[in-house]
Image (tube, rainbow, N blue to C red; front, top):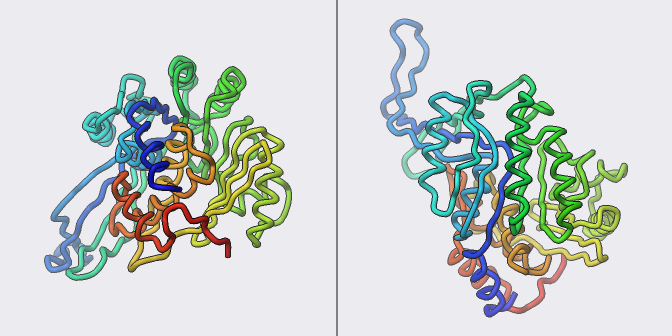
Length: 351
């Protein structure tokens, strides 16, 4: 991507309207001072003294944080939280973010707030040590009345959105935002607006999803096609092109340290390597930064290769942010592309 093209694409971000549909959670970090360790008199167990608590939106909220960092002009989070303390905290976090409209975000007593509680031991002079995480989730089906509200908002907002990003984060089907009925509504929107970018990701895989843009890893790609997990880059490209041609929508396949492959229904298929590691890394949130940057860039008119170059730059920025679920701003992307070892405008060589 040439510098002038970078500026042209990213300059359009402030005018974009992006709908983010999915499972929002609260990322709550408990920072523990090991120098204040105690032993409980009552139980004899170790006591971890928390000296700082910080919270931020997680899961789909991590994608949201990355969209905000990119300066996307209007972002509509479409999801739910519980009518509880964690829900209050999550909504407060959302309301502080520039460009984020929370009018359609549902707070309900029929759901608990999806929460990742992450205890971190803050050792002086080295990266935080993460202890066992404490999660709060919903295990019963999402009520139909909440589905109805989500579907109505999707139809209303989707009619004028520049892009729709979908993040299905829950472990048990139909217990989160992206239920079967919501997926059907996505398929209807895709059919009504074939020019609209809809990019979906699901931790349970994307089998049975409607014909929308799909982001996945290589193992999920093999499963979707009923084949073995592809290993060689050429095999990933072949499978991605096959799936994109079948759906008529973009397919993006992340390959960890080997980068990313993208294919379009037109037959175009590209591979972009990841950028070199520059020290200790923390991969939490890297995939969400990739999703946000792919969608933002493609909605702004970038080619699939350009979008993947920006996504790899974002992932490189994020993995070097330790002890948090990071984000990448436009200036950071520019700096990473400039110092990433590949001169501006020079095609990346495939391994």
